[in-house]
Image 1 (cartoon, rainbow, N blue to C red):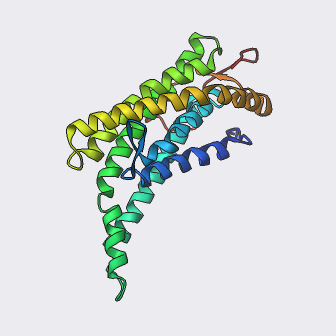
Image 2: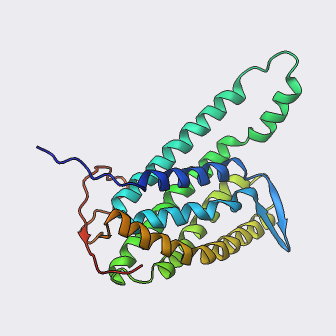
Length: 240
C-alpha cells in the first residue's frame, strides 16, 4: 500500500502567488516605461517576486515540490496563451470593430511573447531552483538571503536574455534590446536584493509552521522527472 504524499498548509498559496506574478508579467511586456535613465517593460513590476516565491518553495518544501510548481506555472501560461489566441481569432461583433482592433493590437504578438516566456521560464526557473537546493546542501542550510540573490542573478539573466530576444527582436532595435535587457536585469537584482531578507524571515516561519526543512541530498534534479516521490534528507537544525 502506497502512502499518500504529504500536504502542506501554505504550499498552494505560494504557488498561486507565483503563478499570478508570472501571468501579470506575461500580459504587460509591451508597456515600456521610464525609471530615471532606465527603460523597462511593465512586467518587471511583479516578475522578480515570482523568483522569490520559487526560492521559498525550493528552500522550504524542496526541489521536488519546486519542480512541480514550475511545470504548473508553465501549464497555466500555456492555457492562458491558448485562450488569448482563440479569442483574438474570433470574429468581432457588429458595431464593436474598433474595440476588436484595439484588443488585437495589444495581443497580436502573443505567440512571440508565449514562446519567449515559456522557454525563458523553464530554463531560468530550473537554474534558479537547482542552485537554491544545491547551495543549501553546500552551506548546510545557512545564508538563504545570499543564496537567493545569487540564484536570482543567474535565473534573471537567463530569462532576460532568452525571453527578451524572442519577444523584442523585430519590435525594437538591437541597441534598445540590449539596453532594456541590462536595465531589466539591474532593476530585478536591486528588487531581489531588497526582498531577500524579508523572504528569509518568511522562510523561517514557514519551516516552523510546516515542520519541514528538506535537503535534496539524493534528489534527482532532472526537470522532466515528474513523479511525486520525494527523496530528501530532513534537517532540523539549519537556519535560513
